[in-house]
Image (tube, rainbow, N blue to C red; front, side):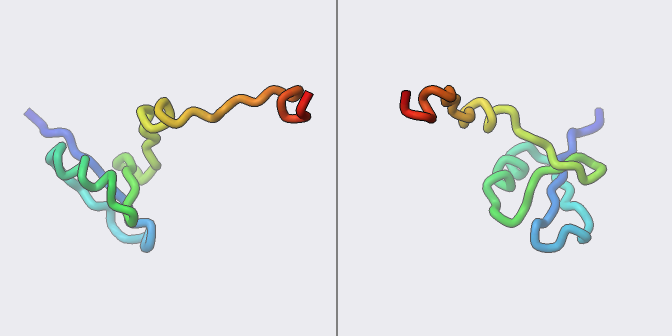
Length: 68
């Protein structure tokens, strides 16, 4: 059985090889690291849907924005 791999790219040196992790707990800790971002095996950034759901963009109608 193949294990799932987690990839991270260094924000300070984006041309460096990707950091490849094989354990879930290590990947979860790396999500909090300010110098790394989670990417797929091709280096494309993975957007965490949970983060988007927890921090929705507030909607303000035009009338509210104009103070009406």
